[in-house]
Length: 190
Image (cartoon, rainbow, N blue to C red; front, side, top):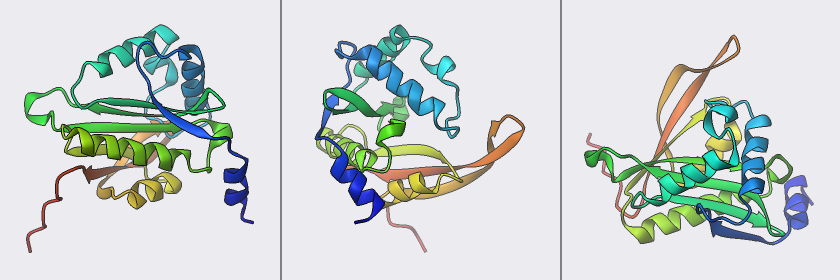
């Protein structure tokens, strides 16, 4: 049995639930996001900048929940958060049909299909909601597993942004990806 299949077999049943400001395990969700940031240098901002405390996370969940078409999903295993995905619509009136996606899986749960499950669930909800038509995401060019995951879910690579992210003294390229949701993708002109 492959390493990935054996890890999937060891994964407890996972439930995907909505992350709302009233999410009952907010401190645990905050700790999960801290783990994602601490174990990956592929994030473009620091955890302290994004969510300095659980109250900041609750504020973000409240802000997201007010936006039409927005999602914040939490993957739970054995009642504990182990992954998350946010889809945050853009606020400008002419861009409200578009949104930005961010996904994270806890370090102990990676390579078990949780990111794929969260992504599939989110895309199905977005298609059913018929508010968001285009989802964008940024990923570091050296994060091959993430690029492969998003490509397998129908995201297309739009651009490579050279030296987009700086970690210490090192620069990394970023990849901008897009997926149409619930509407046909435009046909490229020849």
